Length: 384
Image 1: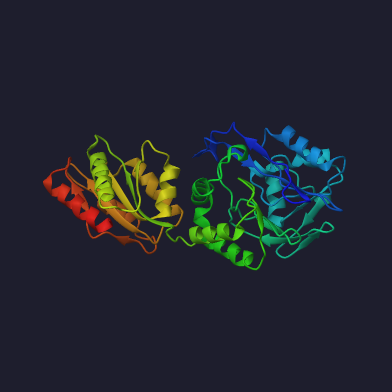
Image 2 (image 1 turned 90 degrees about the vertical axis):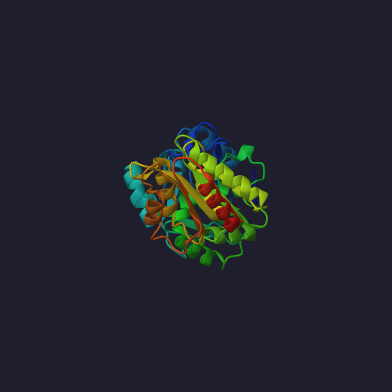
């Protein structure tokens, strides 16, 4: 697939993977993107995951049309992008590897070989001249590993963005809906590093970016500026939309009943959006995604072993480690004899920035009664 006259897509789609990075459900698979820049000198950017080497090398050789590559550019050393470095260097013994110093250190750890006699070490601002195309390297530490470099081709105005601007899903099933799976990908994988993404976006603002070539997901060929604006919103922890997320855990169904009742009342009051998640059964990553998308979050859980139910603790930990902030939080607690849920939740979130707790908290003793139903009504009124 040609992206520009000289830039060709040579990546692969993976429909075998069930859990990306061992935890994210990817029913539509994953794309491992690799690109070839054909010029006086030829560069291939990044490799693909283990198990797809034959398809990938075949794609490269077809794009080369009998020529030989001069460089392999390694933007990121995560194994889904670096697993076939050895294969490439064997297939093309005259090629050199271009990467950051930290990436070469990681290469030694992963591959036990740094190709010392074939290295081209680059840092922020360095360029690689290919002929008509000149690549300028942009350091992007912790987006989302410390060795990450991006590169910018000023000729075609293309940003090779490593894991930035990626999404879940194979490219051969992409239906044009980028935001949902890109958001789940961002907050799951990159979300902790908002400050680092903000630093990268400041550098990107100085570049005329018309096309974005990420390591996962579709090539962005139109309205690149809008995608940059979206990343700015996500990385600044600014709520994207108005709405309420209700995340609950329930042992015997009483907390679930309260969560469902609140959702129904909010919808009756024309709340812009209401998302309801059973944290024991629904995709946790989807719940995390919506918690960052919307501006209000309800945590509904039982007291359990003088703590909170394990799935709720896991959910809150996911939020905390991704720097959850700048939202309104409400609590529904259920305790049959010694309720502790509200206390535990507030303690867990005490170091999170700019969280505002709702004035109304719902206290359930075992099952809903008239008093707790009235508290639910007051909370619905406040949140709506």
